[in-house]
Amino acid sequence: MVTDIKVRGDKVIEQIPSIKDKALRINLNESIYGTFAEIGAGQETVRHFFRAGASSGTIAKAMSAYDKDFSDAIYGVEEDGRYVTESRLKKMLSHETKLTESRLKRDKHPNKIFFSYANTVATIDFAKQYKGHGWVGIKYQVEPDEDYNEITLHIRFKETDAKLQQETLGVLGVNLIYGAFYKYNNPKKLLRYLYDHLDKDQLEIDTINFSGPRFAEVDNRLMSLQLVKNGMTDAVMFGPDGNNILPAAVLYKKNILALRGSFRPVTKVNMNMYMKSYNMFIEEKKVDVENTFVVFEITLSNLKAEGEIDERDFLDRAELLCSLGQTVMISNFQEYYKVVEYFSNYTKARMGLAMGVNNLVDIFDEKYYRHLSGGILEAFGKLFYRDLKVYLYPMKDDEGNLINSENLKVHPRMKELYKFFKFNGKVVDITDFDEKNLDIFSREVLKMIGNGQEGWEDMLPEGNAELIKKHQLFGYQPVSKETTK
Image (cartoon, rainbow, N blue to C red; front, side, top):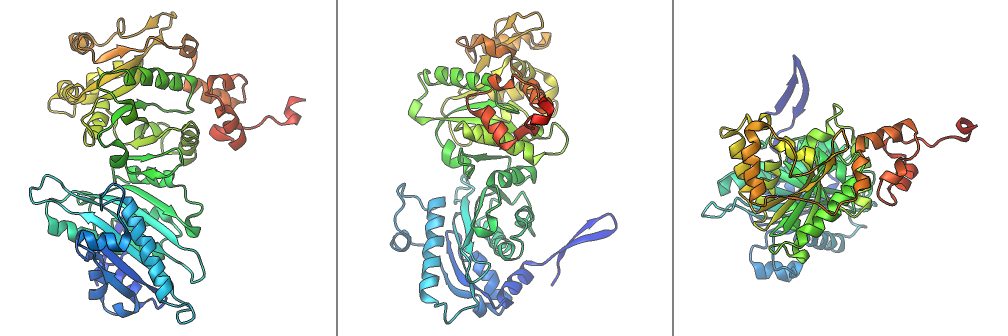
């Protein structure tokens, strides 16, 4: 079969097996045996295994419970009544795995490694207004007497034809199953191989989670980072528990308050900005406190500030934010208007951005918008046309004077534009702030930690200094007794 070939210079660095070859290799493996349960786009994945030949050695069962009543009778009813959800996928995987274990006795199949592949998908509608999305996963063994591993992911279709989406789903499914069995020892590569014979304008993967004995050392936050780094999606999110979460699920119809920063490390300034802006945000008439979601955002460009992405440094930031109970978003959005556009895909409710004076001044710098045909006016239309407010945290200038929305300086050409947004209440000052925090800067704290200086502990939220010392984050080295003599 024809394979794709990756070339670097004059050297062939990798040959990618065709989809048929991948399916056939699985089929010819005498140990791999399991079930396929596919809902919503046809039996697109299992079709490849049937066509490759020798499928009787791999496929114990293939099914598609299209009717909702049939689906509910098999897998149970979801609390929210929906079918294309992570909860439904996990029920499908667990149900099919239990059936496999109960129907295929180990004494008869001592060398089999069982798997259950499942997907629950909604393809594009007839009106072509809703492009479609889905959950895809596999639960599988690597050894017959070993516990199961699980890989689950959420996809968004980009193609505008149902048939093309079905074909894309089938290819993705084969890539996932093949990667699960033959690339599990390198999850980062497994992730990239999901796009074998696929293009990024066909499919977006915006959430992935690995679990089980073979992935015990895998940090799903790092896997999230890889999705953005590899261009598979523009933004990913993970919760305080470190597990990746689907942005659409947590942002849908929510009032969203976002704080962008380096959080390297998160300081009292960041948390004071968060608490004060949050208190102002929930007092807004259009904001429902029960329906409000807070996001701490780190951009990919910020993570690359020192050159290549330092994964240890990223995890250090994430660990502190998670310890404070925060949800973290990693995005590829350098400009603020792109963040707001992204949120607007999921909600029309009021949004808030909390930021410092320097950040707001940067927003009014034309150089960031030269790639737009409408320049800064187009960007501002996208930014402030939505129901959005900026909550501005003050700063001190070199002389110690307080700078806020009333006296900050933007480029003379931007002065009238700034006044317009200020007059219309799009920019409001955080007034109830702690003035002692204005002398705290993350970069100074980071330098103090690295140099073994004292006094940085008081600049961080409660408990964070202890975490940094305990886990030696941000290059912290405990002072040995020898040095203190």
